[in-house]
Image 1: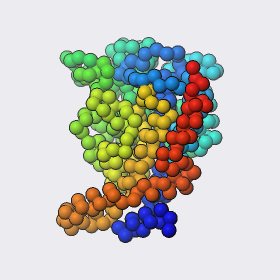
Image 2: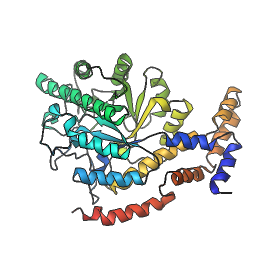
Image 3: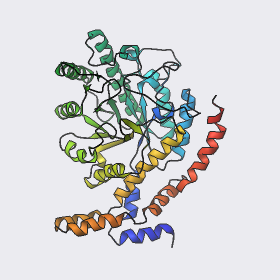
Amino acid sequence: MTPYTIAQEAYAALGVDTEAALQRLAATPISLHCWQGDDVGGFEKEGGELGSGLAVTGNYPGKARTIAELRADLDQAYALIPGRHRLNLHACYADFSGGKVDRDALTIAQFQSWIDWAKARGLGMDFNPSYFAHPKADDGLTLTHPDAGIRGFWIEHGKACRRIGAEMGRQLGSATVTNVWIPDGSKDLRMDRKGPRVLLEASLDAVFAEQIDPQFHLDAVESKLFGIGSESYVVGSHEFYLGYAIKNQTLCCLDAGHFHPTENLSDKISSVLQFVPEILLHVSRGVRWDSDHVVLLDDPTMALMQELVRGDFLGRTHIGLDYFDASINRVAAWVIGTRNSLKGLLLALLEPAAKLRELEAAGDFTSRLALFEECKSLPWGLVWDEHCRRQNVPLGSAWMGALKTYEKQVLAARA
C-alpha cells in the first residue's frame, strides 16, 4: 500500500471519495495577484509613494523592477504551486514599451504582451482598474470626486479597463473578472455621507453602461471597511456595494481583509449568493488594522473554503489572492498563500458531507460535532501530497529548496 491508498481507505470508510476531491481541486483555479511581486509598484513610474489608502512595508531584497523580472518571478511561483491557475493584473502594470499613455487612454495595446505571455502558459487572466498612485487621486478621491473633470477621467479609466478585460477574456477563452475598488473616503467625520454615494452610483452606472458579453467579461465591485486616510468614512462600504450588486446583478467582491476583525466572512457568502449571481472572493489575512498579510491555513481560511464546498458555491465563485508582503521573499509569499488556499479547499472537499448532513437532519448534533472534530486528524496531508505528485510540483517543504536556489541565482542579482 502507498501512503495515498492508506488515506484513501480511511476517507472511504466515511463515504468520502478522495479521487473526486482531487479532481475538483485540480479543476479550481486561484488567481495570483501580480502586485505581490513588486510591492504594488507597477510600471508607470519609478518609485514614489502609493498613497490612496495603500502602504507596503519591508525591503526584502529581490523585488521585481521590470515586466520581464515580474514574469520570471511568476513563472517560478507557478512552478511550485499544484494545478493550473490564473493571473490577476492591475492596470498600472501596463506594458508601455510602445509609448506612455494616461490611464483614461489605455487600450489592449498596452496589455497584449501580457495576454500573449498568459496564453503561452495556459493561464486565464483577471483585471483591475488602478484608482490610486496617480496625480488625479492625490486627495484620495476618484469616482466620487466633486470635480466633474477628475471624476470623468476616472470614469473613462473604468470604461477602458472593461474593454481591455473583455479582450483578455476573448483571446484567452476564459471570462475575465474586472474588479472595481476605489480608495474614496474621509479621514475624519463628514457632514454629508449621502452625497459621495450618490456620485459613486452615477459614476459606476457610467462605467458599466456598455454591455459586454459575460462569456468574455464579468464586473465586480469591492468594498472596504476603512483605509489609510479613510478611517472615518468609506464611500464604497459593504452595504453600498452589496446593494449595487443586487440591483445590477453584478459580482460582489468579498475580501477577507476588508471587514471588522470580529466579522466572519464565511458567514456572508450564503447570504450574498442568495441575491447575486456570482462572487469574487479575495483570500487574504487581516491582522488588526492591516488587511493584507500572507494567507495561512488558519481557521478563517478553512471556514471560507468549507462554506464554498458545503453550499455548492464553487461554480459561482471566482477565487483570487490579495495581499502584499515585502518583509519576506516575495515569490515565497505567492507560493505559501496559494498552497495554503488550496490546502483549505482540499480539506473542505474531503469532509464527509453526506454523513454530516445525515446527522444534522436527524438532530444528532452531538455526533455531528464529534465528527467535525475527528475529521481534523484524518490523513488529509497524504491526499495533498498525492495532488502535488500528480501535478509535478514538490511535496511538503521541498519547494523551499527550489526557491532558495532561485533567490541565490536570480533575486540576489537585483541590486
